[in-house]
Length: 359
Image 1: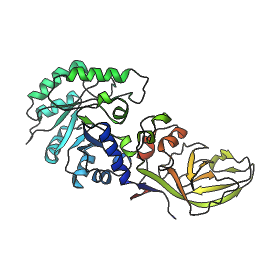
Image 2 (image 1 turned 120 degrees about the horizontal axis):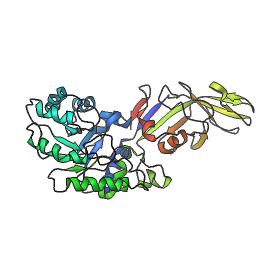
Image 3 (image 1 turned 180 degrees about the vertical axis):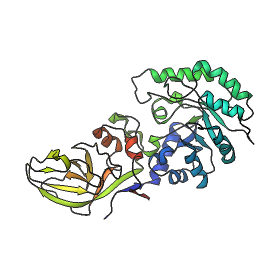
Image 4 (image 1 turned 30 degrees about the vertical axis):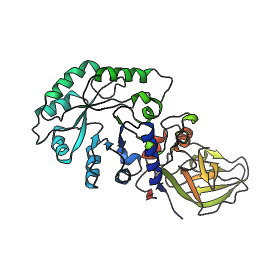
């Protein structure tokens, strides 16, 4: 019997990369492995992506971990460096950086470095989170071109704010803004992350940046745009075991707060996973869990180490049987919709108590 275990299917990861290559055959692929490889294991994911042209991370610590683990391909800091003191570290470890602010620009201009840094200029095309505004673009390009600490040619990127919303006009506006600004530039460009790769092929430029879809989870909420519909396979399957099967009478409540009361005589299964493992405490009654090939509903509040499900009065499930919380047979997107969150949050919030097994 095993407690909470996340099985990471490396063949599924390889399959998904091949599908993304087919969708964007003329683009290089920057595999986004930030947040511990979206919860799948930073170094393990990178090692199983020999076909990637580079890797995207959020923090310099993630980039250095990849270098320590023997990853030699380009690594890009998607948020850029945080302080001028980071720049020599980038040079020593051949780490690329995004530049999105005047503070970063000034640090590059004022720091003495042994070699230039590969810079991706991030343009705010409409998300208004990070990036230089269109009216600042020319000044930043001119100053970066004049800076000896910047490798030439520059590279350019932006990020979509509403690419998962096919009814929104924002994405087309962002594409138009980016293409107009970078028209005639000599450097490589990147616009498309997961949703862009799948739904906005005109945004597939010299580089694509797959994130969540690389792990077999769709960035969309519509069933017709599920990961399976795009021929993607779930990389993570989160499992645990039944540690008890108990009789519950009609009218009896289960768990903290008694938020679920049985409407019949039934059997309750107790599964060894809870919010101490990263399973959301906010999961409501009825959240689906897969036990012996069938969906059963959560019954009662998630506790730190356990949760309970209604197995039904005629069940034959027994102690030691496996339960799948999400993954193969039960997409994380489906679970996330019941909980009122996104699958990104589910896979990235697992705690160190969950055993990671690579298969």
